[in-house]
Image (cartoon, rainbow, N blue to C red; front, side, top):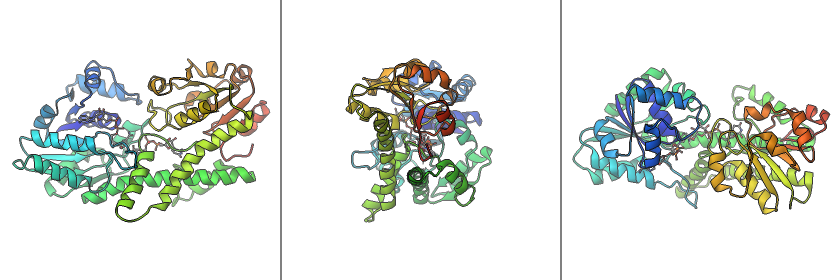
Length: 430
Ligand code: NAD
Ligand code: UGA
C-alpha cells in the first residue's frame, strides 16, 4: 500500500519504518528541512534501539522515502497518517495548530480518494474538526477521516509497534475500515473497531490510567516509607492479582516524558470543557509533582544546606533507552538544586546533546565516575542498565560523602548499607 506519514518524529519515523518493513511504500514528511536532509544522508535524528538499522534497510530497499513536500506525499499515497506533535498550551489544552496546518495542506493537495488517519494523540472531537477543515479547503475530492491512536513506548518502540496488545481503529466508513484493517493485518494483533470519538478517548483514557497507576504506587510508596514496609514487595504482591497487573507499578521519582504529563493535562481540560471535573486526574498530577520534591527533600535531608554543594545526577532522559528529555524529572530536579545554589554535574548515556541547550549551567561528564568524583551526593534519576552495573566500590572512593539518593530503586538497600553508603530510595526501609 502507498502510505504517507506527516511528521517524522518519534512516532512518525518509527511507524513509517515499521510500515515499510511490512512491505508498504512509505513517504515520511517533515517540515524540518534539517531532519529530512539528515535522514536522506543516513543520519537518524533520535535514539531508539534498532531504529537506525530498520530505517537504513528500508531506505536502501526503496520502501521508505523522506521529503519536505506534503504535496508529493499526498498525491502519491492512498492512506495518510498525521503524526505531528500535540504539545500542551499554558492552560493544559492540547495545542492543535500543527494538526490544523497539516489537515489544510492535505486537503489542498488531494487528487483522488484518500483516508486521512489521525495517529497523533488528540482530544476527542479533533477528527470532526479535521474533517470540517478539509472539506472547507477541498469540497471536490472524496475522502475519509479515521483515528488510529498509537500506543508505542519510547525505548521499545519498534517492538511495541510490531507486536501491539491491540490496534484501535476509529472509522466512519467501510472503505476506510477495510483499507486500515488490511494495512494492519500482517501484525496479527486484535483490532478494536469503533467510532472516531471512542478511538480518541481510548488513547487519552489509556495514558491517563497508566499515569494514575504510577501515582497510585508512588502514594503507597510514601506510606511504606513511614512504616518500614517495602514498596517493591507491596507492588509484587499487588501485581500478582491479574485484575491489577504487575506493569506500571514501579515507584520512583514520578512519570515524565512527552506524553503522560501533557495527556493527563489535556484529559482534565476535556472534562472541564464538557462541564465536568476530573478530580482523580488532578490528584494524579499532584502526586507526580510531589515525587520530584520528595527526592529533593531527601537530598536536603542528607546535606542540609545545598548552597555551594556539588550534586551528581545520573540520568537525564525521562526513561532509559531514549534520548528524549521532554518533561523529564531530572530537569525539574536539577533546576530545584540550582535554585538552592548547588553545582550540578550530570551524565546520561544518550540524552546529553539534547540536555546541553536547556541546562546550560550543568557540568556534563563523560561517565558516571566523573560525575561522582568529588560530589557531595549522587542522585539516580533514570534507571539505565549502565547505572545498575556501576562499580560501587569505585563510586564510594570517588564521592566526597558516601551519599546516594536513588530515585529509581535500582540498588539493594541492605547491600548499600553494608558497603557503607548512606543510601536512600523510594518507599523502602533504609
Ligand atoms: P515529535 O515532536 O517527535 O515529532 C513531531 C514531528 O512533526 C516533528 O518532527 C515536527 O517537525 C513535525 N511537524 C510539525 N508540524 C509539521 C508540519 N506542518 N508538516 C510536517 N511536519 C511537521 O513528536 P512525537 O513524540 O513523535 O509525537 C507525535 C504525536 O504522537 C503526539 O501527539 C504524541 O502525543 C503522540 N504519541 C507519541 C508517542 C511517543 O512515544 N513519543 C507515543 C504515542 C503517541
Ligand atoms: C507512554 C505509554 O506507555 C505508551 O503506551 C504511549 O503510547 C506513550 O506514552 C505516548 O502516548 O506517548 P512512554 O512515555 O514512551 O510511553 O514511556 P513509559 O514507559 O510509559 O514511561 C513514561 C514515564 O513513566 C517514564 O518517566 C517512566 O519512568 C515512568 N514510569 C513508568 C514509572 O515511573 N513507573 C512505572 O511503573 C512505569
